[in-house]
Image 1 (tube, rainbow, N blue to C red):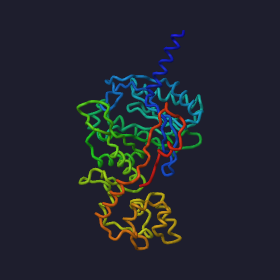
Image 2: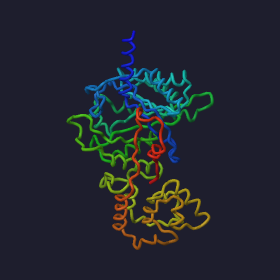
Image 3: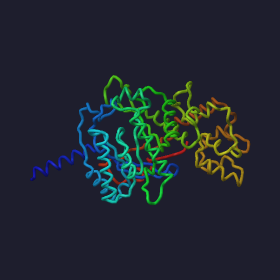
Image 4: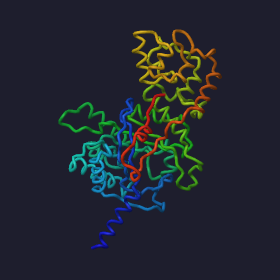
Length: 416
């Protein structure tokens, strides 16, 4: 009896130590308010039938394997939830046996939480490409958000690095979820359950294949326009496997990832289009300047802009002015003409905006000429010498469970 208990305890310890990418993660749910919620991020299993060349859990890798049961994940989640450590769950999994089998395990986990434990927290669940539509329907009625990872920026790259996965098996369920979300919004009533009310997202790896930033950004733009995705996430390629088809990188392309996120924000909230930010002669983002400043310098003929007469969408094109500050400018100038001091009080990042605007027909006091080289030199100098912001750090499940003020500050969202 004692031996059986020890074996069971050892299995639980192994699952916990592997953690299956288990962590506490802060996710922004209020896009412009910056509100973050804490999620338990957990991988149901790392036992995968696929052999994707970029993945640490690929079938041919010699790594320790473990799989939680649906009950174990549900118990773990509800215990953290009752102690106010988390507000929701982010659930994913490698593909066990088959896509349908894995989806059924995910659905069973969430069903226990929702129906047995009456868990009303936020749930984001990964959908397994290739599963049946019936299972997508079941999952969609129980979760707040779903995501289907597009993995790589092109079909050729998918064939090269993940030959067991097919483009259609990813895009078809994404299209199906998008269609059902729209139908649900049109037909929703108090008698009908919501279908994925927080929408769907996707994620792709950048840097593992040769696609340029323009192709990646146009892919994201197409997903937003055609499938109404809430968010595209970009993951810098981390070299964990040796393979002739994989690049050899000294470090993950984190700056490139950051530039894509900045450009993505411009697509979703600032009215920019992919072809405006990049083109065939300029297919990749500037390493020295953020995409908005880079665009402004390449279109210097459109500046300076008079802050007291420009419309809302023109204001959004000015570096240093974000969605919130643009709205404040529109409201404030109904009462009085704005000067540079007033702009700073309204939240405008004047150290960038001052090079591209006039107030009451005048340049900023320390700018004596409107010269492209002068502006670019000063912006690059500011970028190099700015005080580094606190880096985001994913919280470990085992280090500390209660987030500190410093932890919350690290989860920043901002305007360009």
